Amino acid sequence: METDSERVERLAEVIAEALERTLVSLILYGSAVSGGLRPDSDIDLLAVVSHALDPSQRERLVDGLLRTSGRRAFDGPARPVELTVIVTDHMREAEPVVQFQYGEWLRDDATAGRLAGPHVDHDVILLMAMARDSGHALRGVAPEDCLPEPSRGAVRAAITATLPALLGDLTGDERNVILTLARMLVTVREGRFVPKDAAAERIARAAPEEQNEMLRIAAAAYRGEVDDDWTSLQMAMRAFVADAASEIAAAGTSEPLLGHSPSAPLPARVVTTDHEIPDRPPLIVEPGDTVEVGDRDAEWPAFVFVTTPRGSGWVPARHIQIDGRTGVVLVGYDTTELPARAGGLLHVIRDDPESGWAWCRDDAAREGWVPHRVLAPPA
Image (cartoon, rainbow, N blue to C red; front, top):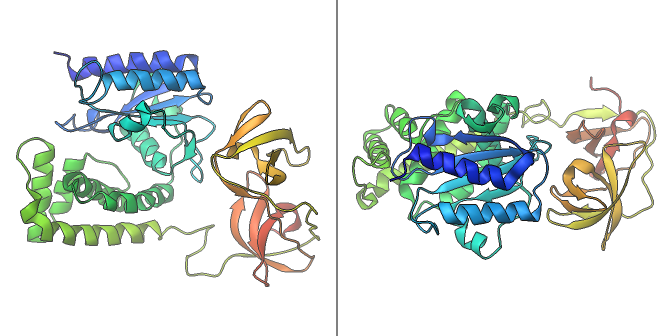
């Protein structure tokens, strides 16, 4: 019978063969490296690649994973695999892009050819943080040599963003939801990741008696030591979920935006030079849109000119997966610009230093992009 270590090595061969020379690193993380695989644990893998996947690479990944992952694996029942693929150029905290993702919950979509293409998913911030924190490279460079270190604020925000979907799975997946909430709590409190069962036992120490028992049962069941029957644990479970969700949500809004308190006024900037807006109607592109890609802006090299059936405009190149003269939008963008007059005051809502523009609001409550060069430096 194949051992877990032999199975991991076979998976690494399948994935490395599919990704070929684009593979920068294949990282094993999660239970396999931080406490050991439990009876119901997935094998968690994060692949970092140098370029966007082409259709043949995606097909080879799907074929290999359908053969080797989960109880319905074509080659026979096996431990389930969760694989996420990211590109080195698309790891920014504000807009992390998943190139490819597979898990057993996506098997039917994979079989039918319906797996999502490249898309922004803030959950990848958590995967990168865990992989960098304790992951082991099966192929390629070490995690710390290819993954940026997410800020604590980005990790907290990502945890908060995943909370609604997690809570929606509570009925029927009680143990996993409880253990995941416990790990989230440890992370927002201590800034580090621990195995789910260890997190539950850590949280249990200070929990009310009923919740303490419920958390310890969940941890023991995760390790395969007991059977868990959630019928008798409903009251303690729902009390814990309410308390944990409230604390996690509060932690996600405690990080300052643009360096100011959420309750403070938006930072104001004085306009030093008039800014005239183009006579072209603004364009809004959405993730998944196919666009025709033109030239880069000589004055603003972060932007490319795109054309769609709805119009045209300048969009940051990093928001698009470009292949020659066509592209797929990864991150939605609104090209609206805000006219401004020298001496006026604008409130900065969102800054984009990489492009050199800031999304601002004027005293008439109009919003749009304004270039940094017409704004006085912050006080």
